[in-house]
Amino acid sequence: MANYTAADVKKLRELTGAGMMDCKKALDEAEGNVEKAVEILRVKGQKGVAKRESRSAENGAVVSLIADDNASGVLLELKCETDFVAKGEKFLAVADALAAHVAKTSPADLEALLASEIEAGKTVQAYVDEANANLGEKIVLDRFAQFTDGFVAAYMHRTMPDLPPQVGVLVELDKANAEVAKDVAQHIAAFSPKFLTREEVPAEVVENERRVAEATAREEGKPEAALSKIVDGRVTGFYKENVLVDQPFAKDNKKSVQKVLDEAGVTLKRFARIRVGV
Picture 1 (cartoon, one colour):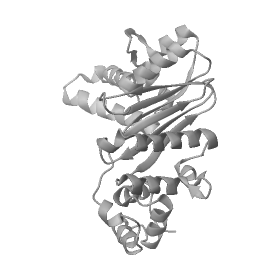
Picture 2 (picture 1 turned 180 degrees about the vertical axis):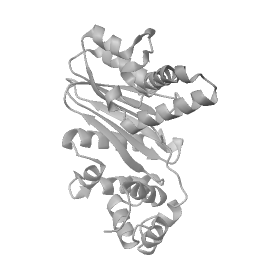
Picture 3 (picture 1 turned 90 degrees about the vertical axis):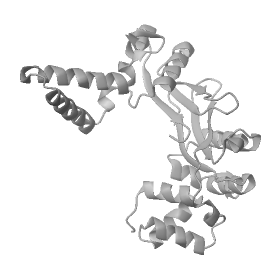
Picture 4 (picture 1 turned 120 degrees about the horizontal axis):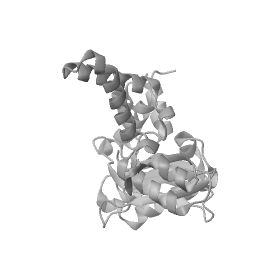
């Protein structure tokens, strides 16, 4: 098997606009060399590859679909090249159709989603490729989230009034509480935490933060006897910046997000945050 990663597949898709399976086949043939794979796709006549090589799909929209009973929900990002296309009805209709398909089929991952059949005889990848051709821009689908095991809610944020939402947040509580779900989702949109709890932070990340904190303290000339306490304090600061339940709550910074959840008697099981192009 050729030596390449999922990141290589993603890069090749972004460079060429070709489908995931076509990119994998090209990388197999190119033995993992991305530049050679681009040439292979061009030689094989992949539609629009040569024209799309230097294009960047950094605009787009985030869409959501929440079940009427809030028992499940989908968040999906669809990217394009320009904000003009991003705010068009046809582009948004494609994004909404893809979200509805995810809600209906619950694909295990992106590869399964792209290979699934959205219409009779047409895969999601073919559907996206068709949109690519019809809209005249590179259209990229490479992120989605689906929650189906609790009270699910979404918050969608527009960074510009004339554009579709560029930031979307999906949250899943263990029990119904629409107000808390909305408040916490808005907080996540604003403060972009990377982890839900401290336990989710990889040990190597924490260890690296401790090393940096100690090196910084020594560089600052802090006394040896105080280093341990200083390092602990700076690691705690890292948690408050990156761990959701440790963050000061947006609407009342005297409380942590965990305190707000505890007072409401609910548990946040998981969350997803997507910002277009990030």
